Image (tube, rainbow, N blue to C red; front, side, top):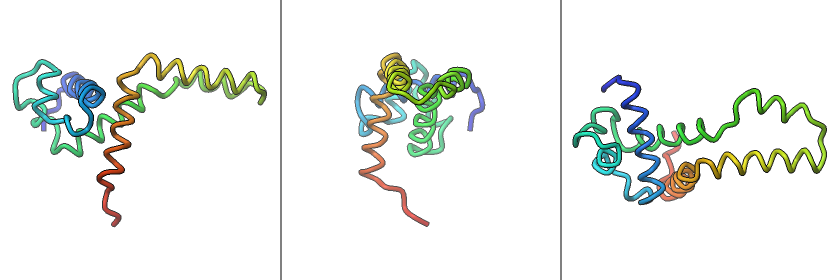
Amino acid sequence: MRQNLARRAALVDAAIEVLARDGARGLTFRAVDIEAGVPQGTASNYFGNRDDLLNQAGARVYERLRPDEAATEELMRGRVSREHLAELVGEAVERVTAFRTGYLALLELRLEATRRPAPVS
């Protein structure tokens, strides 16, 4: 597998865009290659299989939606009150709004997990 981290990140971001636009059924290596603007076959060089691509896309969505540590600490130091809860919810809504395609991709990933649950060992 290839190790160019910048290209891998671009492919994962392209996978998120494909998930948001076409759903999980539309996520193919070819669709990711086209979205990323790379030669055909590039995604298959970076990901062992489709499940690997789905897992990395999910991890990237959570990485981008997670608040930074400083913001989390600041929010957690506040008193528990309606105002504090409203601030927490408002901050979460801002993150989701700023990364709309990521949130749509996350919903698609959850639906795909329901359709194809992982076997229990």
